[in-house]
Length: 325
Length: 254
Ligand SMILES: Nc1ncnc2c1ncn2[C@@H]1O[C@H](COP(=O)(O)OP(=O)(O)O)[C@@H](O)[C@H]1O
Ligand SMILES: [Mg+2]
Image (cartoon, rainbow over all chains, first blue to last red; front, side, top):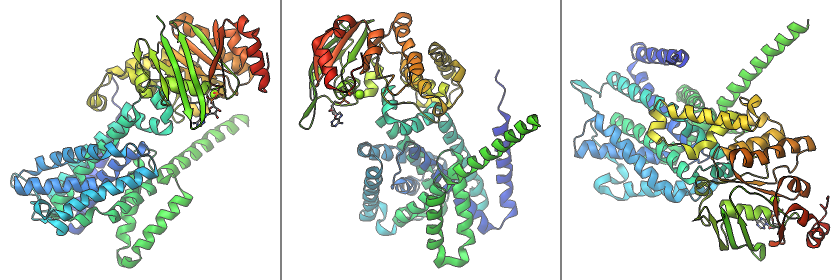
């Protein structure tokens, strides 16, 4: 028998309790913000998976779009329930991700960044050019919101709980990936590719795996978004959205699983508070990005650990001087 | 039959033939030295054998299997593993985690089992990793971060990571380069034990003659990308051509 690790379980219980209470404490409009926040949470955590191998792509929101379009087609044409469209969209996005990464794997760094952008735009072009079945430049509308028995997910409250459940499952799985040998292998192959290969780690295969896993979860985020908006629009998945995603992850940092989450929380607050300053927002976000790139290149993640280390060092330092006196 | 067989191996970088028609044959349970002055082509030879560089022409056969043209990770799976001239390790992980990660090739679980399983297997890998760390006398540093180790210990960790692959043959690229005499002794002490206790064939590539003379039973000398001569340490030390080759460079220190 192993002793259950109570600390993360306790944390999880608190998060679930707070998450369940939120809809009763805020207005309907704020519930919408929380729904979007949880969708973005899946997205930003999924983006970190390939980022840990050093692969920063510019096509991640396009893969989210693949999930959204898949959901739109499956629910409009085949009348599938939301409980099928979400996992199937993930699978389709994951497969598209695998296909996309096959040529990308030959590039690294900046080359990867630009090539992924080109491939992403190619997919977006297909959506725009093919009115049938993708709806052309205007996208698709009339996607059902989904339902569970007699509960209609058009209402913010039930959909909030649905998204919360999906987000929790996704985050727990992504956390397990991060803590498993696979997650450690991703980081390891990034820190020393030559060494990784020499001990038998097939680096291209693992980079492809990371990219595919990221695409899989991005597909879930896309499916949840499509059901909420009732529509998909190719503009939702363009490079502007991608820039937001990059800002979240740069602000948060990628060293640990919690970095992107911290980044998203901070930037969501800034985003919501800056509503009255609408035209200043790009400047505000650009400024924040530059601030983090220049002064905190490791993101909040890194800052958090530096502070913690300082406190621990001071504590142990005090301990030593106590003994000395 | 020999374990590693190299035939007419050539590697050109533009006009320069860094390895120019080398033939080598290394049998099971040998401790072979490969020496030569700086720039002779030793590291290039190494990178060719381990698959890090593609060959211009020639074949490399390991354990009856042609490995030239394969990826380094596939060659490692076949049981041929190399260490690096630099300190190569996963710096942000502990010594134990390094060796566990390096056991990658031994992992049988698939992706789903790794993510969702209870990971009995992981426990077995940790046990074996501890054995390897113990064998390399690194147990005292097991939980230290690799980046905080001394140079000597980092080199030893590099060898432990290679051993994690459970190789038949290990190639060490200048394992004592840049180490002080104490550290050098600490590292070289392990080479014979690898062969004697774990039956691993060792290929030691060095430009420091003394280390090779003390450790190896048979030595191949390389100069200008070609095999100059082969023989036991005594023969090599007394060979005119070898002395000349080393005199021509500035690191003659016999
Ligand atoms: N990647 C490369 N590109 C061009 N020339 C190289 C490369 N690697 C090695 N060389 C050249 O090949 C020769 C042999 O180098 P190397 O194998 O590192 O020698 P050694 O390890 O014996 O000191 C040297 O002249 C070196 O400059
Ligand atoms: Mg060298």
